Image (cartoon, rainbow over all chains, first blue to last red; front, side, top):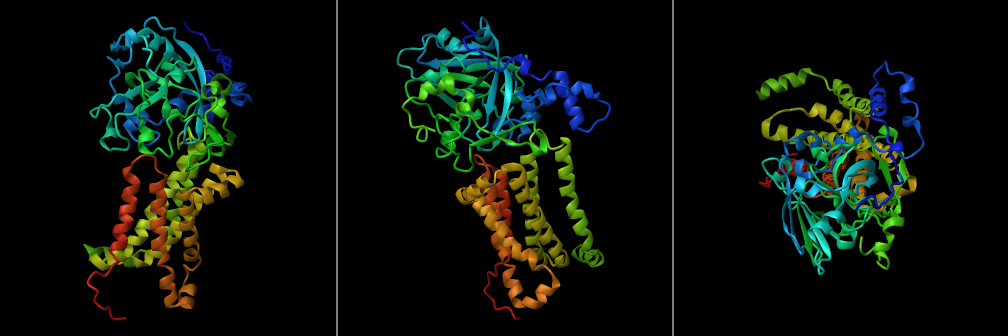
Length: 299
Length: 199
């Protein structure tokens, strides 16, 4: 069961790899690129996904360091084969499932989503993945379960960033069950049609496009169904700044900066800010999940 | 070793520092324009300029302890280091205003509402009178008051480091090392033995 959600961004919006490479060359000041090669996508006045380079060289993955370029530099040390996820808690068929067991029989779709970081920058990413609900249905969610907890791999030998307690490792995230079952919520195994790069959370990660990026936990090794709201890393680190929900909301500021605007990555030194959209532009799809909730209180 | 360094310091004038000191800023802007600062050059430029400012602050604060504890006399370079500090913090602020936040109403809201920005801003404002009076005329004119005025450097340095600590996400080591270095250099000025020093 897949293809329940219709993308409003399509592959027509994606910059062809050739075109963005040419653009990079021009930006880098290299000569010899025919002007014709940059016509179209480079100057199109529509939302276009970020280049593969943008997406894979500007990351927050603190297990590999707090610098934006650290994940690209150091995440190569992560062993992603073999990989397995322990699925436990309130499920009918708990167990340790290999990456192949999890992905076999799943329809891998292309989902071009806006990605909004809590730090007020954003990208558009063409993910490949399947709906989390398909996985949860396969393992059988028991009737008392109300939340889903996720855990990232914790491997001091492979992750140089965990040597210092920037956060209380391992990284943990969580969703309410209805959020997890929402058709927009996917387990991504790749981007741009390629296997997931390590710095983006190889081999398998969560993507929840209407929430701030840190909710979309990377390199998942454990999924637990629970009755109670699970503890989540950034919320444990600073509850005033990072709520459990962390839905993208231009009207609720982070205590240290405004969330009203964002800057799209890839615009260079003179990139303009653009308004941030309610639920990151997915208001139509997800607003009903939070009906009657005070979003300034449940931020 | 120290004598050797002091001999060299006597020979090397301070003015080339101004030229050498400005080069990293030009280089960073060039990198930002040509993709050398990565895919998000604005934040990177802002961050690098702020870091250089803090490093220069530390260099300026190190001069007195170096003389006092090691006999190394680099005092003639202190004005250049101080003015370069001001230059980098000013650029840091301008990048934040013009390239990063962009929206005037939001700039004011940020300065008033966000404590780490308020603190950084106060630190910058304290540096203005120091930069303005960093000339021989002011030293003569102000007399002993000049020395008192320039103790504002200590407050500006602490505020700058606290600004860095506060803006970091999670528990990070680097900003704490900067704050630690500044506190150590300030502590190195305290006369613990309470002996009266002849004027």
